[in-house]
Amino acid sequence: MTVKVNGCVIVDILPCDRLATCPGHPLPSSISGRDSPDSPVTPKGKNGAVCIPIFLPLTVLFLIGLSRSPEASVLQWPPSLPSYNQLLDPLAPVLLLGWIALHILLYHLPLGKVSEGLVLRDGTRLKYPINGFHGLCVSAALLILLMWLGAPLGYLFELLLPLAACAIAVSFLLSIYLYIRSFWAPSHALALGGNTGNPLYDFFIGRELNPRIGNFDLKYFCELRPGLIGWVVINFGMLMKEVELRGSPSLAMILVNSFQLLYVADALWNEEAVLTTMDIVHDGFGFMLVFGDLAWVPFTYGLQAAFLVVHPQTVTWLKAVFILLLNGMGYYIFRKSNSQKNQFRRDPTHPSVAGLETIATATGKRLLVSGWWGFVRHPNYLGDLLMALAWSLPCGFSHLLPFFYVIYFTVLLVHREARDERQCKAKYGLAWDAYCHRVPYRIFPYIY
Ligand code: NDP
Image (cartoon, rainbow, N blue to C red; front, top):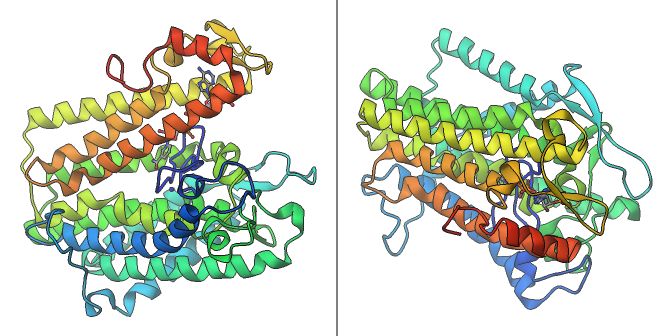
């Protein structure tokens, strides 16, 4: 899930060039070493495009398998993968396809407003329904109804591996469909960067920019809905499994569920922000994005809840208060800094940002040097990382696995920050140097 620029969640699976989805995702350039659209694919990029579609799905299955093993040791070698039988359950494809169908239906309901995306190369603008938050609310209502009817929601725990296997299969099938249909798309509808002529690379990165079936935008749909909402539904299933096993949910499980629900709800509440992200504006829709949205985010971002089912943890009230404060602080920094920059970029004369100190750049755009963006150069990353840490702490320190997300995310954001710095330096030149001089720390004040 990497959307962004504004406050949504992003799905960067790998530190890449662009994955900024406001909600988020995996990008190719870093894999490819490609610097400009449609430049020849380097051997590094070719290898990445071949290996990653194999390596990342195996990683998802490996991590889920680990989270439910008693040892949960990421250091075990050779790493064990689930057996074929563990991946099969006829209910899984029914549930997964039903879930996707439900959200396709909700996408089409006339709820919420309709917004226009940025201007495309042919001068037109696409329309997008802003109703992802409604989709979350309807999903929550359905879950409550199912609970009331006595549905065994805890069975999601047993279904986790089969569901992940189905999500991976759907990612491959959808990516193949996207690749094939892209050959019928007009040239202005293709993504700059996904048309190198190397089939594996283009399949991986995505050829078509905004593939649509009628008004149904496949990329926009996948960015924030089935995977992101699916993530919190899976979390809730883990909570219900705990209730089945132990009679009530643990404080640790409640904290993890609440924090991640807040993150997802925030992304959907700010769904419109995804329309200006690299994912939507720049990246083709290929395997990397499809897999990130449908398999990586729902099945790896929620590992803590799956871990807690098998490895119950005691969280004292004092520790819970500390973790709550940490998550609250992270969320506050994340939301305030993203909103401040978005507001400034949309309307620098708005009263909430008009008083902030800025420096001029040769492009005509100004850079904030006070407020959140005068604190560190990426305050939004700082907030995001504080939250990521708060999601792991309820799982205790006995295992490394629950810290997978915060470790992976730190690497991703440090890499992403360096990439953004390079781009800003190229864009703003001396003005960027002045900003760096004025605000010396990148993400962590006095550390980095
Ligand atoms: P940012 O929101 O950090 O945007 C970076 C851009 O902001 C720069 O390229 C520049 O663009 C502008 N900018 C930088 N400094 C200033 C300044 N001082 N004043 C004004 N504008 C400035 O981009 P991201 O997409 O990386 O992050 C958005 C959010 O998404 C973050 O909160 C991040 O944590 C989150 N995220 C989440 C992921 C996940 O998987 N959960 C993955 C990746 C990101 P310009 O000047 O052209 O406007």
